[in-house]
Length: 295
Image (cartoon, rainbow, N blue to C red):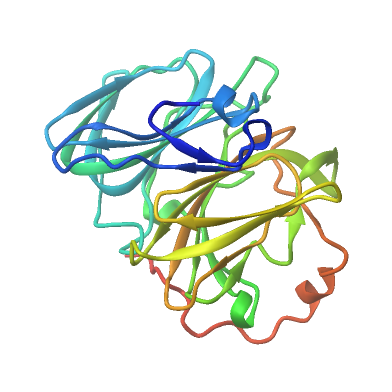
């Protein structure tokens, strides 16, 4: 496990990882979770703070990556191309911008203002995908929009890299949940490769709240174990298997970034049969949504 993180749970089934604070006007990784730290071979997840005017360089020989702007703005250069990304005041202020980079691409970022970037990576091989992967700038207008569920289980889904995106393994979305609501509900799982019913996917949940004092509860359970963790601003939950619903406390609008990778480019999942009927009998959606609108 990264020395930058404190963790909760038994070492062999650790679910919860906490961010470390980065002082204002400083550069550093609030989160740096390698596949080994996460207990799988698929996803490497980090959150990097970059001070205004500071450069950050990177290259992953065997990992594709998507850099999702959480706050601020930056210029990115690769292969002689330079692109400005942002600004974004924070995740609740507007739709995301991101940059997808296939494995082996060198990049250099310069923060045009203090920024926070989610560094989402997935291990790839020549067998990972038959599609041709190219560096791609993802603008707010390119991102999806869905209001899912109903009543106090309504949430907003913003796709950044859906299954149709031309990448090897990475799939990414943002989810906005109003205070008091359930999300990832009915409880569902994706830990068996059984197409088209279900794909075997590892998944990151990276949480933020409109009010940093906010909190919620994330349950991860199978027929062999049942764990519930309290999640706060900046926390990461690693879902390796099992059903995994989330609820945010009353009064605290929640955000989470989902990063998935696994057996195939599909988000097919199976509902817990005890609660599956709710998907077919939703009440009207929560009128507080959408929480975030396209510019």
